[in-house]
Image (cartoon, rainbow, N blue to C red):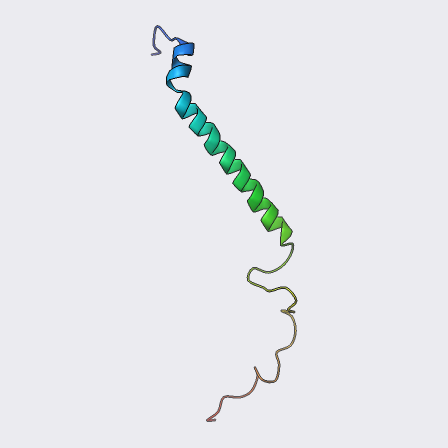
Length: 71
């Protein structure tokens, strides 16, 4: 059941800190989401961990394909 004598103005005053805190938390979350989306969209189609200027599809060099010593 609801309270029989609800005074909205009094409740706003009593809960002002909580309401401000929830609003601030929502604003911070929205800002962080926008920053995250801009960061992710800025990377384009690069692979995670790939450095700019390297070609991940290039054939390996002869140094990396050399047989191990001792065979």
